[in-house]
Image (tube, rainbow, N blue to C red; front, top):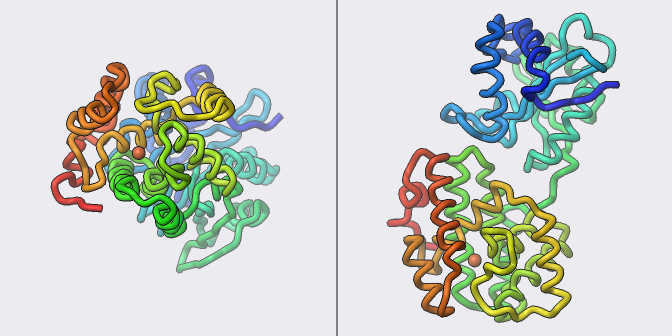
Amino acid sequence: MVLLKEANTQDAEKEWQFVQRMPEDENGLTNSWHDVSREDFMREALPEMIAFSKGEGLPDGYVPETFFFLWDDQRIVGQFRIRHHLCESLKKGAGHIGYYIAPPFRGQGYGKEGLRLTLKAAAEIVPEEEIYLRVNRDNPASLHVMLYNGGRIVSQDQDKYYVRIANPGKGRYPGREEAEKLLEEAEKCNPGPWGNHSRTAAHCAEKIALYSGMCPEKAYVLGLLHDIGRKFGKRHLGHVSDGYTYMMSLNYPDCARICLTHSFNDMSIGSYVGNFDTTDEETALIRTRLQETAPDDYDRLIQLCDAISGAEGVMDIIDRMSDVKRRYGAYDPQKWDKNLELKKLFEDRMKRDLYEAVEKDCFRP
Ligand SMILES: [Fe+2]
């Protein structure tokens, strides 16, 4: 049976044998671990591959990348890689997906099946509407694999074709312009400082994402719409369920999720700062959805941005939490500490000061 498996320590022995035989550069797919010793593979190469998939230890300018191996029963026949989102150089260059099938297994359909499985995995990871690929013009077999999987050639130069394939995972959140329109419309229904608070959160999210190997566009949109539930009037906890239901009705589940998770940095309804003004049904919806959701980097990012975004601009996290505490009379101490943990988490990832990264002193919404 043919299946795609992420690089992992259980399969290390076979992965090493495969990777050390992969050429250093074939048709543009590079392998920095060609001829690697078993010891170096176990100590350096494999941990690096696993770290890259989590966005950790990336060299400057790199985006997170997941390494997969294509298995046929007990044998590895190929390697497939997904770069999680585009940056300027990937947009013009190698795109999202790269792959390699070992010579003895070529011409047997492994490329087609491997790319099909990789596109399925990419739908869960890649936020862009189209998957970008690039192939050498003197490699018709690989081009054929792409076209077979729904690819279309959008441009070419002297030695490459540039191919795009629709990403079925697209549309989980709106584009930037549509998100801005949604916020403007919502503000007309319920004007207030929350609009500019959301713009500040979007700005912060975009900047932090840029330095943390996350997708800046997705971060911006999620930040902009995290409080969109306020469209439906002045409610406290109610804005969470209103936002969730509204975004689900527009078929933007990634935004719906953030409407829910941004208020609960420990993922439990008990830590909410504000009034419980929801119906039993709404409370049950929030509680069950929170239980079902394991927080990811975007959940954590918007929780942090919410905690530093004021209507006038970026605020010091302590000042903002103290302000909320004054307004509501209390602030869950665990939630307080968790926000400081989030600040540290992203500062470590960015390798820079949070306020410097989000241009605290000069940004105005
Ligand atoms: Fe907010």
